[in-house]
Length: 214
Image 1 (cartoon, rainbow, N blue to C red):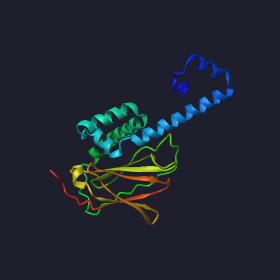
Image 2 (cartoon, one colour):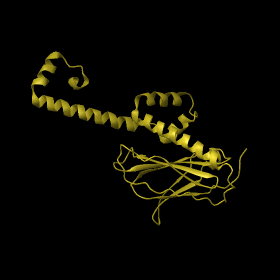
Image 3 (cartoon, rainbow, N blue to C red):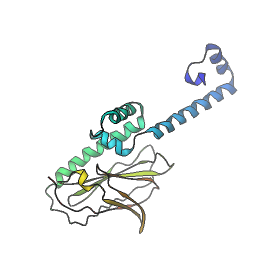
C-alpha cells in the first residue's frame, strides 16, 4: 500500500520493479484504491437540490462553504454544476422569446420524451419543452446509485412566477400508458426521478395554477 501511495522506501520500490507477482498485486491495489475513491466521492456528494441552491446563491454559511470546498475536490460535481449553468443559459434565451405569449390555461402539460441509452461518458444535452408560459428543462445524468440507470431531473419555470409559488406541484412520470413514479416540484422549481432505465418517458405536471406573482 505504501508503494501505491508513493511513500515506499527504495528497497521496496526495487523489489516490486523486479518481481512480476508483487508488481501485479500493486497494480490491483492501485485500481481498487481508485475505485474506492470514486465511490467515496459519489457517496459524499451534495444532492442535485443543493447544487442548484449553491448555483443560485441560496445556501447559507457553513453549508455554502462545505459545498464550495467539495466542488474544488470532486470532478463529478464540478461537471454537474457546469451542466446546470449551461441549462440556465439556454433557459434564459427561451424565456426571453416567450414573454409575449398568451396566458396558458390552468391545466398544463409538459411532455418529455427521448431518454435513450447512451454512453455514460456522454450524457444527452438538456431538452427544453414548453407550453404557453410554462417551460421545463429536462436533463439526464448517469445514476449515482444504480449501475446502467439514469437520474432524470427537471427545472420548471412559469413566466411571471417565482419558483416558490410552484413548489409542491405534482410531477407524474409515465412509460407508455403506465404511471411509474410521482414526485413534487421543490422550492427552487426542481424535481428529480432517480434510478430510471433508459427508454421513452412522458412527464405530466399537475396543479400548476396560472397567475402572475408580483
